[in-house]
Image (cartoon, rainbow, N blue to C red; front, top):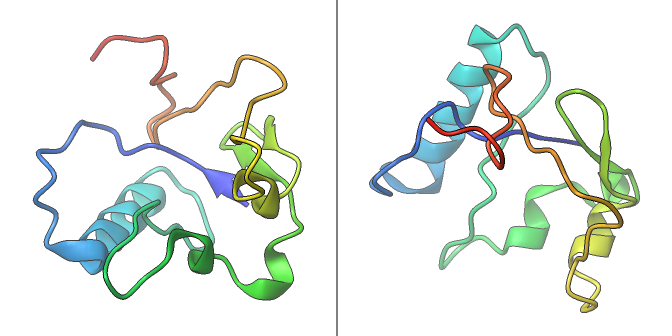
Length: 103
């Protein structure tokens, strides 16, 4: 499971979860990434933990460079605060380290 940030900040008006999912899809394809990318968002009709299929919830969560962020998807929601074991690096689809690089 790969975690990536959008290339630019958003005002929040993304036309709902589907609009945010579509933006993830477009940016992933523009970056040459294959697979399904979904927005890390919740709504009245979607719980955050449900965006990953049940059979994939024991897979590790990695950034787009393959560095492990969480040992499993379930670990994020275990109630222990989802602490990182090391300083995380989260990259945007265009490869910027969003936690350390200014826009």
